[in-house]
Amino acid sequence: MPLARPRIARPGAALLLGAGLLASAGCGDVDGGSEPFAGTSRFQDSTGAYEMRLLEPPWVPITINGVTFFAVPPTQVLSINIKETDLLYDLHVTGVGGDAESAFAAAAAAASPPWNTAGKRPVKALSGAQGVELAFQQAPKVFRREVFLGTASGPTFLMDFTSKNPMDDDKMITAMILSFAPRGTIVAGAR
Image 1: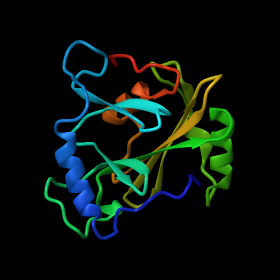
Image 2: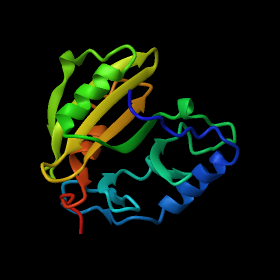
Image 3: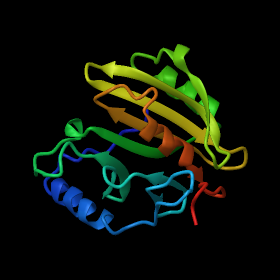
């Protein structure tokens, strides 16, 4: 199973989410031209470990205790009682050990129950990062898309997407994956 993820059901989390919504409205370089990810904003991790393109809104980067994750809230009206299970989508990006294939195999075997890897497929971002992904249903109304991407000479990352609906061929999610660039690579369309 992937690393433990921060939950947003803490007091004040909705305020952070609300601030994130307001701050993101003017943040990032929105590219509406003929670039591969037109209409998206470039997000760069605060440590410079990776960058990717987000459709903002609906995606909102949220940082809690120094950890950033990405969320699509159910509505524009936020509540102090919002929980991660209320989100339409969420994404956690974490560094993992080894190359993408071995990191995937380790996560699949460690999950309880172990993942059925029959649907595993190769993936390659425009940055040159490559690896494997698997989309599956974890529970009723809980769908996952686990993407392991890395480069031969750089770090490997897990993009851990969760949604209330299947994401196998979700074009918005696929665009985020294709735009992912670990340190030392460049997101196509970034300036």
